[in-house]
Length: 165
Image (cartoon, rainbow, N blue to C red):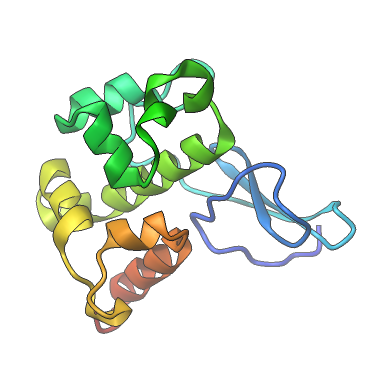
């Protein structure tokens, strides 16, 4: 370990290119160096209360539980997470790293703002519809769809620390 400090909540997929963060377990984030070897690791907080109970025994997000929890159809959930409908209907596609990472990013961001918003349903409404001025009026949903979930997390961290929204 080189002692590099990683941001809390880094969420990318295993098999990432050298220099990218890789999430191995729910509580651990590791960073691969240019050689492909692990160069740093950090422990992230346990999953937020929104995500509790939404994972199966293998640690994968259970789509049926997410759908039931938020009162969405699989098609609506796929659209919200920026995935194809097939990604949530086919068991082999649900288990892919891309699908799991995108759903986890969505759940993490919704979980981070649940207390501020007044509940998980309000947090989901914020995620899907509230424009964020710091991102040119784009919503958290559109940013996550474009692979910018880390930017949304950084923005939320900035607001938590007393920065301007």
